[in-house]
Image (cartoon, rainbow, N blue to C red):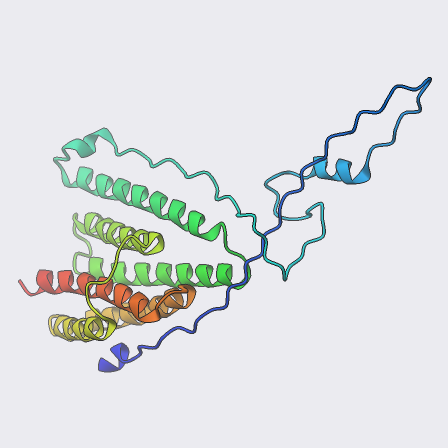
Length: 262
């Protein structure tokens, strides 16, 4: 199992390639002095084309794009989606069914917040940076699903299983939002975080059945793919990025170790 954690590698720094195409604004027609029986003036083709372009349409710009030249115009992110409210029964859920429904509703809120953060980060990007962000997000989704399948497996068939599953989804989603918004910082260096994660991982494996050990291994491999993809997208200090993501995963496994060692 130690081979899983040794799969630590710094993501390659990605080159920035910002490209944004400014929407052309139609020019105001210039007033001309009156003349006797003036001939109707033909519309300016460039002006007509500008007026026909939808402002939010990313293709068919009025002016030819300059793909290699960065633009000072900042793309505008889509309007944030409203956070869905919790059902009234979530004020005091008194049955397991109500708890399950509320856990799902809380995940829906977290998922909306993450989508808003993702769209905000993505809006000003272009080219390779956009591709890197998409790759990192897809890797995170694979990790999220694989890890939460591992977490809920111990409660398979039980009435509490949905609450556990959606609680896991919510927690990982909140963590991903914080990473995208850069609202968290690591409390230790990468080497220390990596050693701590490896120690917790090995301890947790000792409490698992062979099937659960395999699930955790698959989740950890998916997490490594996400870690590397995300830190390849980040343009800052790679050690700081690796430390933050590693520390977050260590906290997740510590919770599982506390639960399963009781």
